[in-house]
Image (tube, rainbow, N blue to C red):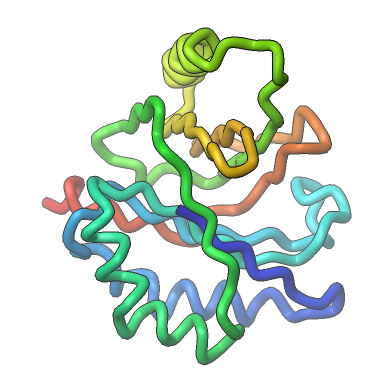
Amino acid sequence: MQYRITLPADYDMAIIRQRIADRGHLTDDFPQLAFKAYLYADRHEPYAAGKANRYAPFYLWQDTEGMNTFLGGAGFAGVIESFGRPLVRTWSVWQAETAPDLSAATYATCETVAIAEHVALGKVRETEQARVRADADHGALAAVSAFDPTGWTIMRFRLWRDAVHASSDAMDVYRVGHISQPSAKH
C-alpha cells in the first residue's frame, strides 16, 4: 500500500523530515504491519532528479485487517487532516523478501510498469519472483513485486542501504526517513 502526496516545488521538505522524526515511531508496533517505510523525495537533491517533492509512505501488510485498521484509525486521520484524502494505491503481492532488520535502509525505489497484453500473467509472475530474489541477492534489504489487476501493472518496490539512481522514467527514488518494522523489535 502506498499514498503519494505531491507537494509544491518550493515546499520546505524539512517540514516532512520533521513530521517523520516526530511521528515515525507511532507505527513501530502496529498490528499486522510487516514494515512501513516513511519515504520522501526532495526535488532539489540529485537522487530525485528534479521530479516532484513528495511524501510517500510505503506499507507491507501481513493481511488486510491491519491495513483497514490503519486507514480507519487516528494515524491516517492525521494524514487527511494535514494533506487531504490521498489516493491510496494497493496491490496484490506476488513476492516479498525482507531482511530481518530494515533499519539500515536509506533509499527506496518504486517502479510501476505496464503488463503487455500478449504476455501470460503466470509467466510475468514467475519472472517477477525471480527478479525479487535476484535483487535481494544483490543487496536490496527489501524487495516486493506486486500486481494491480485494475490497471494491469506491476509494482516493484526496493529498500537499499546505499544511494541509488532511477534506471527508468517509471522509477521513483526516495529517501527513507524512518522504518517501522514490528518484527525487528528487540
